[in-house]
Image 1 (tube, rainbow, N blue to C red):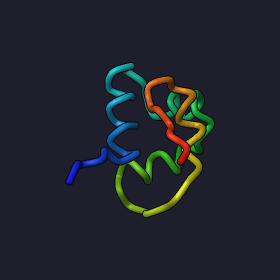
Image 2: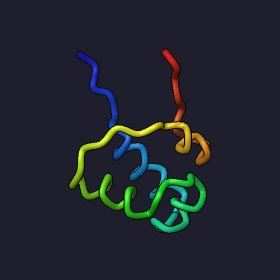
Image 3: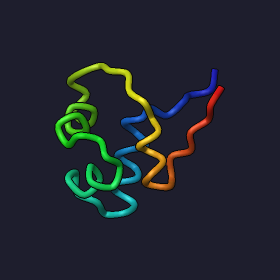
Image 4: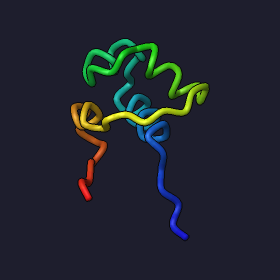
Length: 64
């Protein structure tokens, strides 16, 4: 079975590659900084619309 990267992994990779701080990534994507922090800490499971992540340009979104 193929491993599928999590949204958390995509966010971490993108922030690292673009040298972005959490607040700047929040500003670019429009995702609340607290929500991003919780995702990165893995402290809350949640579902969310991935569309704001397209704003960073490296997270492809596939609509099924």
